[in-house]
Length: 343
Image 1 (tube, rainbow, N blue to C red):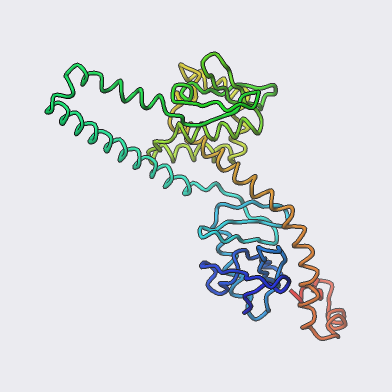
Image 2 (cartoon, rainbow, N blue to C red; image 1 turned 90 degrees about the horizontal axis):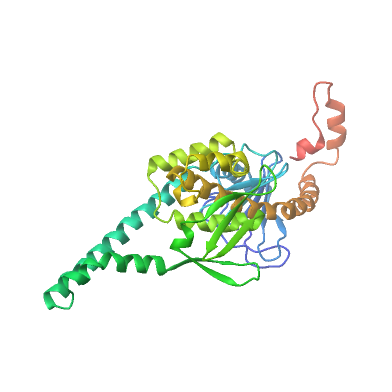
C-alpha cells in the first residue's frame, strides 16, 4: 500500500474512517467500475490504487457516502465531507439528497445549554457582588434597584456583528439594531432581502449579500439555541418545501407578506422560534452546498482525465484476446463489453 503521491512524491496523509484503506484524506471511488483513487492534496493528481486493495474499501466508501448528509452532487460526481475531515468523491449516478436534520438538533441543543449556563453564572456572579457590596456598604438599595439597567446597558452595548454600508465602511450592529432587522421584498416575486437600521441609516442587502448577512443575523438571533420540539418543527418546514434552497426561494413574495400578517412587528426577532431556526438552517445548508459545488466542476474534469488512465491501467490485466472473446459470445440479450469486464 503506497503512502506517497506517484506524481509529486508528497505524503498522501491518512484517514481514520475507511478501515480497509486508511491512506489519504480525499478518496475518489467508482463502485460500478470498481475503481479507487487517492487524490493528492498537494498536486491534486489522482493516484489509482492496486486492484487487490480496492474492493472492500470501495464498498466501505459507498456506505460512508450514503450515511453522510453533508454532500453535493452533479450528474457524474458527488462530494461528501466526513466528520474527521476526510472527503469522499463518488463517481456515478447521484443519490437522493436528504436534509440533514440530525446535524442541527445537537447544535441548537448545545447553544441552549450554554445559554443557560452563562445566564446562571452571570446571576450567581451578580448576586455575589451585590451581597458583598451591601455587606460592605458599597452598594445602596437605590443602586441595587438599578442593577437590571446595568445588565441591559451591557447587553445593548456589545457589538454582535459588523456589516458594510454603501460606502464600504464598517458598521457595528448591536442588540437594538439586530432585534429590528427585517425581511423585505425585492423586485421579483421570489426575491427577498434583509434590512437593518442604524439610527437614521437604513442598510439594505439583497441577493448573495443578503443571504450572507441574513445568515449572520440568524446566528446572532438564535444564539440561545432552541428546544428539541422547535428544532423538529423547523426541520419539518424545510422538508415540506423539499429542500433548503426551495425553502429560501419560498421566502420571497407572498411568503414574506403572509409571515408578517401573523407577526405584529415586521422584525425577524418577532418570528416564532421554529421559523427563526428554519431560516438559519436553510441559509447555513445552502452556503455549505454552494461551497462544495464550487469544487465539483474541477473534480469532474480531473476525474475524466484520471478515468482514461485507469481504463488503460486496468485493461493491462486482461488478455489481448478479450475483445474477440466478447464478440464471439455476445448474444442479442447480452450487452457485455470489454469495458464491463475491465470494470
